[in-house]
Image (cartoon, rainbow, N blue to C red; front, side):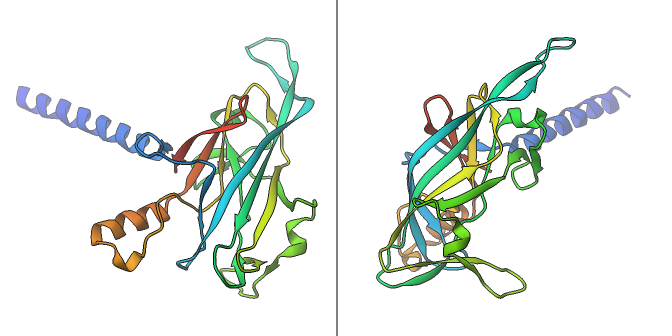
Length: 239
């Protein structure tokens, strides 16, 4: 009987430990701890190809929106109006190749923060297992919307948005998020670029181990954590 009770306790402890590990695996983890990375410059992988365009984030800005939230911080507390912030991200995207290309364009972005969970109009995103704001528009530096200089492919499945780039051309674009979040939030994370931070190498000259690492990094979903007060990218998260 004592042996049975001992085995039962061991089994319970093992399952609890396993559950904690599984829960931890679902949370975003920092990649910058063991990797020296320029958070502002990276490669954006073109899907289903060996091409990668150069991305450089040039500006991070927050616009104040007065008293858009009604916040009650404690039970039976007084509801107070609170200001919100709208995030905009400016970036350059460059075709590094010596030929003109119609390129599948990164056209889905979202921001997340733990505090979004308690807010209306912020939905749950299954891919990141977090609450997100994905209401945004993309314009060029002349405020021309993305729809005016892009076109969709005719494919019924796997439809892609294409943007034409001349050889070595750089386009300056701005992502404008359209749903404010409370100004009391200290950090938000931007998800959307198909980022690749490793040094470009000829894939076919890599060892089997290097190929495995390359492909694992290439297929990860990344988030750039932004310090709101400093308007600065402070970390790179894996989802």
